[in-house]
Image (cartoon, rainbow, N blue to C red):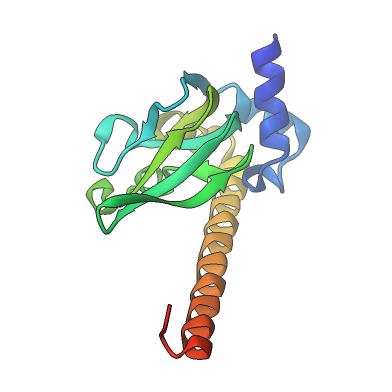
Length: 165
């Protein structure tokens, strides 16, 4: 089936599964649902409990992460296939503290891994759980590193211009 092939391909290209063997990726893929979103449709909104316990993995289409600032939406990041969203809710964090939205800019497919389905692997496949969680940490670290770099660039710009924009 084309969708199954797409799920496997996206997982293989994601930091989420960098340490998994092919058979483990296929096992993980069997737990994933694919949701389709139309252009302009919201995938994840701040405080939205509908996907609060799910890890979202960008499959296809143009998807962006935005945040409201100064009364308007600002693009924070354009997701690539294999990129993650919904990490805070998936690991049990408070979804009410999330301020970013995920929006489909074009018709898109998103892989959805529900926490309860993932946790079902704890007894039978603990290595998959361990390596996937390591992948989530690596992905999150990359986000923090990118944001720190952008912050330094902005500070340098402000310093060079004397705060004059």
